[in-house]
Length: 171
Image 1 (cartoon, helix red, strand yellow):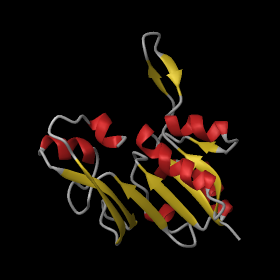
Image 2 (cartoon, rainbow, N blue to C red):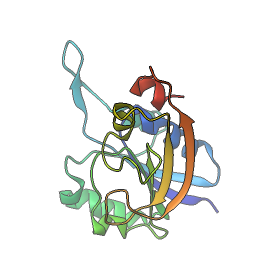
Image 3 (cartoon, helix red, strand yellow):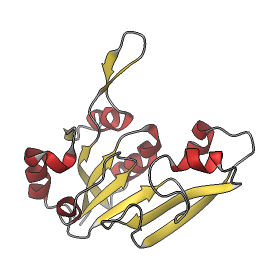
Image 4 (cartoon, rainbow, N blue to C red):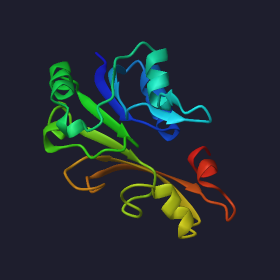
């Protein structure tokens, strides 16, 4: 029986993770939580996040609360799903203890650096700022700290001296 997943993510960086979960028969993605649509471009058109666009294309439910910790209706709906796991990749908000406790197996975070280095926001940009020659992705169990949970897997990628954040994000 497939494990049930709720995915939390927003930018392009999170797309491969969500697509992999959708494509893998071992998982059933129950829905997606992402940041609210933002105005972008010359005409200041309201645009969905890359994650929302993929979720809608797949027919998945989408939640976009401005502040997840204070979104009582969304929190009730997420709890009612009784998901096995929440997967979080570059979502952009800190999850409360209440949210972390919802899924049966806990919450897993995909972080854009080789932890413990560059915890927190913008890890790829900080790696480039500090001129590292290698970075990567770390998956970990989430706890109440900022990128402090038990690490599960790491995958390293080299960083060239002239690479941009966009190039590092999409090796």
